[in-house]
Image (cartoon, rainbow, N blue to C red):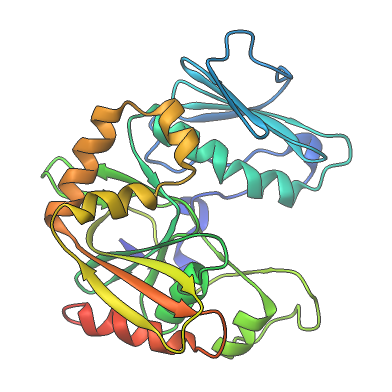
Length: 299
């Protein structure tokens, strides 16, 4: 359901209810039924951890993420998130991390795979834009929202199956994180001109409900002279979707292989999947936007 930003109010996913770190609470998206967030003590380690990675541990029903200088996060049973802020931590940083890997963990605990992707909604449905960090996901999403599409997700896109059997992407974002060069390329006015770090930019239209997926675009960087795009077909679709998972090690630790295969298989059957390789430099985001628009019915 696309809405103009001024219509959103409390419907916006990820809304901060307080800007003070001591009282900081982030709202979980509505698709996490019964979801709740609390500020409280979080263990430094999980005694019964079965998997460990850089800054994270997992055991049945619980996932721990420790971000030095920011907070410790405990995701439990796909519905509860406990946050223990570090002393003096910035509330915006607490929020930013809460709505990334901990939210991915809650999604995985609910049996929903999560792609490392942004997502936007056009006339025919949702388009999911996958890729590693710096591949151009958020910049491409911003370019499409400037053409009237609605933002659904940034960096994290949980995938499920609706009651009608359609593959859908769930909302996770009310803004896009853009670097100064992206703001310049898109000619977006910003009050943060001159800064060297990323800016939170809010498009005019958001989509606050799950949207059926019509296409997936997987962005890659390569040392090439021009943008190259190719549709992925057959069994390669499953491999491509596996490569697009949000942190494959965490996915393996939290999600049953059967659940991943079921949803990935359904998505491979119902959505067009494309790989796009773009040069490291000398390219423009509008080139990618035109590829997506040319593939989108009704755009």
